[in-house]
Length: 324
Figure 1 (cartoon, one colour):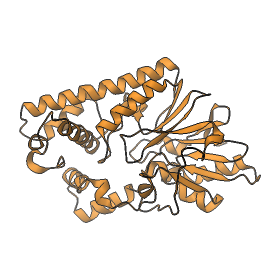
Figure 2: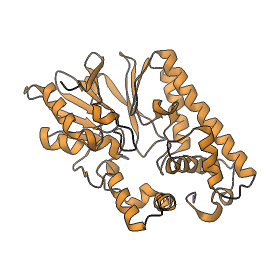
Figure 3: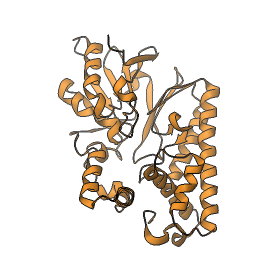
Figure 4: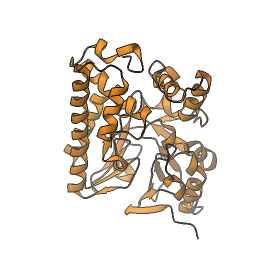
């Protein structure tokens, strides 16, 4: 008998994590939250490529042929969170909603150079794997969702689209353009998308080329102010209990502060090469791989330049992936 992929977090609030989403590796699917309302089924994020078929099966079982509409709301436009949206459209005529800034990414129509920050990601992959540019571009095309295009994504109406569920959208910038979460005050549950990663010591997820250090700081502070009793992250297990939630966010804030100060320290010591910065984050345990550590540094560097802590010349040594 197959394992039930659905876990009830609270009344009508389900976490969908099938066994295939638990496989280690960078392709691991993001979590899917299902709000099982009497009037409709609301799906927040639609998971990665490996869980699409299982998601359709679970949704079909929940509907039980009663004709309820299906709505899918994307917290942001990354492939590990939106690969199932097209299947939901095809099988259930689901409407797909996203924030205005996220729509081009959810539709996989945003220009690649916006996502890749002047091809910094290509440079990083080529440096690490000595692969030709055409191969790297093809790999990134897949990673950014170009193989799973979603059509007719609608603008999420912050005042009415999902109010029947008890949740309302919360702007949580930092990880990616238009990144949002959802808060249910009655249940004290906050869905945070890719804000922090419980799998990696509550590390803030600043590993996209377009991640925003300033936005992440404000989002973490916003979570502190909301003070939910349950956090539902985009990856990993739920964080339950007001004290545990508070501790997790403080850990993320501390990680950002320490990493910022360490990067300044290394820059001021004039490292002979940028790999020293990457090695620094290895020692700090930040980031699952070289590419992600470097992009994490990229986010910090852009922030430090913005606030005048370091110069552009310091942050773009040898004109590598840290061009700002």
